[in-house]
Each structure stands twice: as structure tokens, then as C-alpha cells.
Length: 122
Image (tube, rainbow, N blue to C red; front, side):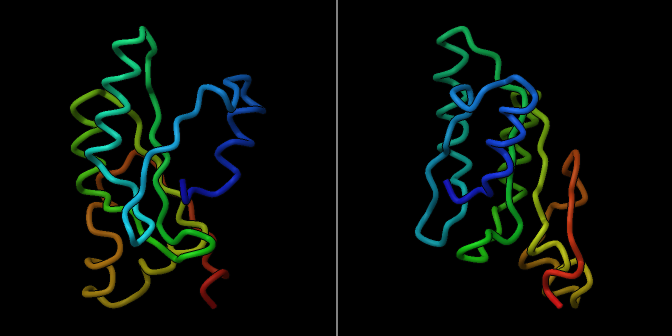
């Protein structure tokens, strides 16, 4: 829902198709809801689909929201899904104080992949 458009672009370029992407509801702070992610996974599995990838965001383009990675990791582990974090905007928080890293990026060390553009917070 608050994810960057590049996820849809990648799905198109890879031949997966945007119609196979699912938007997961967000909370009032623009963060993906882990319980809604799990609900959608269950719906997809019941329909015979095979989810394989979850694209989280660390610093959404419009709101600056950081998805809650610990909860998303738990859901991904339960269903064997790859968890990627788009930290293009907010990934530079890795360079912040330990308190800032813990508040914004708790659990980042357990994701499967992470990208960031350090210059975007300069």
C-alpha cells in the first residue's frame, strides 16, 4: 500500500505480473500490518497460489514510514517467504545512534535482503 512503485515495476519486468502482487493493508502510520500479511498469505494458499516474496519498506517515499520488521519476519518464517527491505530512503538510519537503529530498523539483521541509498538522507 505504501510501498515504492519499483516493486510493481520489478514484477512486470520479471514476468510475474502486477496482477500477482497483493497490497497489504497498512496502519495509521503507513506500516504494513503483519496480521494482514498473514491473512493474505492464507487466502492465497487456499486459492492454490504460492506466495514467495514480501517487500517491506524502511522509510516510505511519502510518509517516511518504517515497516515493523520483527513481526513481518515471523510471518515470513512461518510460511517460508523471502523478506526484502527497500531501505532506499530510510536505510541510512543504520548509521544513526543505537537507539535510532533499534526504533526504526529493529530486526533488520534477520531480513533476507536489504537495499539502501545513503545519499537520500543527507
